[in-house]
Amino acid sequence: MNPKVSVIMAVYNAKKYLKESIDSILNQTFSNFELIIINDGSTDTSLEIIKSYDDKRIVLIDKENSGVAKARNFGIKIARGDYVAVQDSDDISFSTRLEKQYDFLNEHTDCVAVGSNTEIIDEHGNFVCYSDVCASDNEIKSTIHPSSMFRRSALNSAGLYPEYMFNIAEDRVLFHKLIEFGNVENILEPLLQYRIVPNSCTKRSNVVETELNEIISKAIKDDEISDDDITYLKNRFKSNDSKNINANYHLYLAKKYLWDNYQPRLARMNLIRSLKLKPLFLQIYFYLGLSLFPEGMIRNVYNFKK
View (cartoon, rainbow, N blue to C red):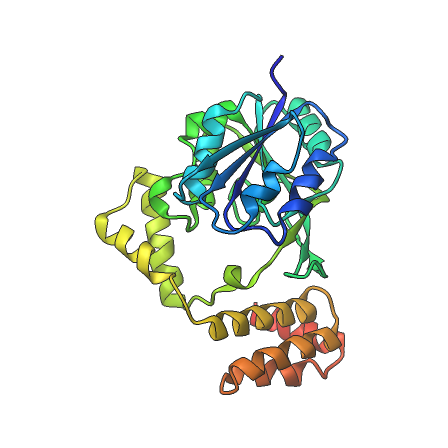
């Protein structure tokens, strides 16, 4: 008998968080699932960690590195479940996630995908804040992709993840295509711990965002992009500047501790870490000063900036 849900986990050099992530799926209250793990050419001990499990629900695919979009598509193509859930190899699903999303899709036949709110955690697993997605999100403004479960038939109709996007906003393109086949909704309860790591907080200028949005619009409309767009995506977001990456990461956390979870001490701690890496970045000094004000005043500044 085929499983009802196929969980797809693409893995690349994830040894630090992988066991906790796999365990969170294997310990679900919903048991009728398969966990398809695609080891996407990891060079660390990720493959050994996966092989250490003796669980018939795990389907291991070991392949050369091709990127997360291709890895997920490979998993979807061999999936046997009517529903497909995504699990990133550094995130942690709460034990009732699959059960609640499975029940939701069964009850809402017009819905092709369901996400949820999340607990956002930092690289060390410390709570940062809660996400704030709305219940219905057909405009794809706030759906958190790693918290999602899809109807497999809708994924196939939408054409799966666009591999030509080179792992940049491929989920946004997919969601925009999915809404042609039904509703996309969110469960307001947090069902996942969503880990933010330094590389996920690369700073983008307004010019970069504008160019990226134009490429995304082309992909949504035509299901393809130009050779120049492909070259841009390949090169634009590559960065070996670890100082800059980590400085932006701690600045991001500091803002969350000011705007979303008022913790001025933790905000200042992260701002100081950012300052040590980028001492000439004036924005850090602004937020350091702001962290000394009471929550109500900080909230007014946030509303003004919006």
